Length: 360
Image 1 (cartoon, helix red, strand yellow):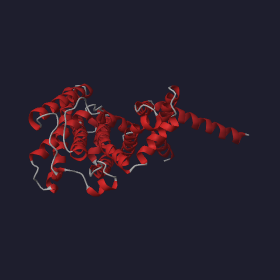
Image 2 (cartoon, one colour):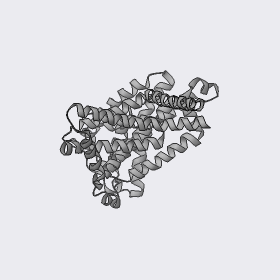
Image 3 (tube, one colour):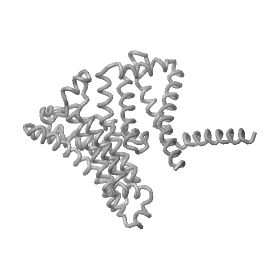
């Protein structure tokens, strides 16, 4: 029991120390280039928390990061790297907007859920392609999902230009398809925070229930830990590979649908893959695959992303420095074995000091 408690403590300390070390490294780099890190971080934090609008925007950004983070996390738990979150997000976004524009007069209670389901389904299908190829042909899901990312990008742009818009932007969806809520918009001084934030919280809880209290979730984790032993125990590796990828893509697609009808209300041609998909990978890693940790990490990244816009004007620091801080945090998360080594070293030293004191 004591060992389990220590492991949980270590799991909490690793992301916290990763964040601290990331900010410290960012501060060192700012000092090296002649900038004041205290002023920069103050501008970032106060810019977000000092304004209801920008705080709402940070939570809005965290909403989509939660879906992309959970999407990556469940595939990672099953032992796969779903690098195609951005493409699956785009698949959900374009399908949701297309459906919402096709049926603008449906009642809101029908149109909004139907639109979200459409986005989730298409995101799942897009990820399911990589899952099926991995399950039955042993192809690398990393390579396939990367290729599918660019397929989704160019297909989306083709659909927009040839079916959904005259130029590079679609029409806005009707009010019946919007996730905007007046009281939430007014509360955050006109920000784009929407109903998707509460959907994200509900999905976090459902994800936790699925992974910890349901047989299917246990099998997904078991296949990720040891596919050979799982197969020997009667679990179908192929089924769980495809299931994990379908859920992964479904979560990303749902995030894309919410991004479409909640944040923007339309769809426009993309010059590149949405960074929010790749940042979701970082969020999942920082949250160590835990849904609640992923949600908190999403809020942190939302604050960093929105707050970075205040650094140039208020502190004279390029907003790229915020990206450096995020990259540093990701680096320390990726090198978590170094942090665990430091934690073990500190514990060993304390134990030696205690033993030395008792002998004395």
